[in-house]
Length: 120
Ligand SMILES: [Mg+2]
Image 1 (cartoon, protein in one colour):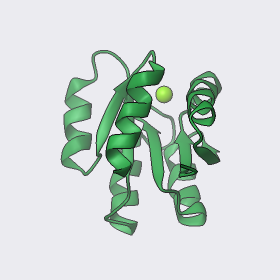
Image 2 (image 1 turned 30 degrees about the horizontal axis):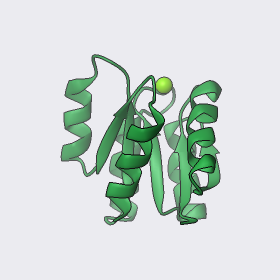
Image 3 (image 1 turned 90 degrees about the horizontal axis):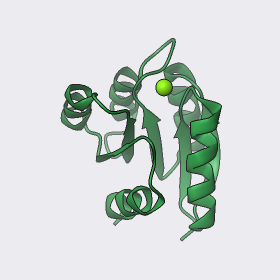
Image 4 (image 1 turned 60 degrees about the horizontal axis):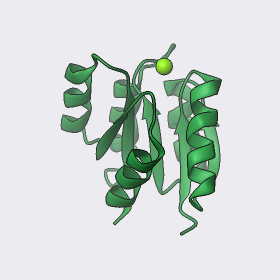
């Protein structure tokens, strides 16, 4: 496959978990960001095929970053990473253009299914 992915999460452990799943499934992790500001900057710089975007982050949250990324590139492929109990924010994100969402704790098969569906 070799699709380029940008991973965004304020928790290093969560980034590591997703990166591990992606690398084992032949995706290329081209960058990581730990807040919404970095996410937007790295999106511009790296032009990834897909972004996994955490909702709750300092500085700029995932919903705001999503809107900015979609403003820059309406065709951006963004999957939200949510925690339990964030259904309302997930709905906001889907309305703002997110293609899908994955729920923590991540299950590898669900992550890969969401990514493949989004890129197909
Ligand atoms: Mg977070």
